Image (cartoon, rainbow, N blue to C red; front, side, top):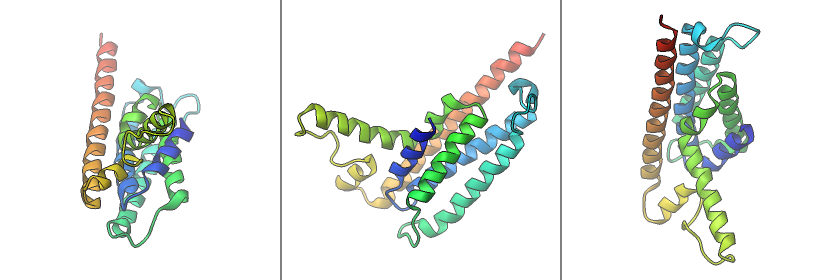
Length: 190
């Protein structure tokens, strides 16, 4: 899971602000999840048995969100600085580790929806290309953000629309997290 997340964020890092903006949404989600878990330790079994304090995880993810926001100031199109592999792999590792530490493994693909879509487009392209005897492609180019550029979308349009998709994915993941909390709290009532 950790390797997949780091690779997916690295694949997403191809347009100015795309990886940083989508990661910002993910870190904000983990900030809320960590804080919610801290406020409801009886629901999540935290602070017992030597587990990591979820408030510390919320602070860590808020710091990463702030770093991504500060980075976007200089990485917005036209970018003056670039993330590169070191930044993308570090952000992916942080997202994966936050999912492990907050026990939200199954929410991670939804929290990182843009990254899953980007890595998935590469996988689909490779499977179809190899299955066709190296003659057919499903997308004009992968990762999928380049496909949309090749069909005529401006770079900023691709980035903003992917951010919107990322925001919707994060909102859905938080809705699932809060819905699960409501289900668990109803089960605890006498």
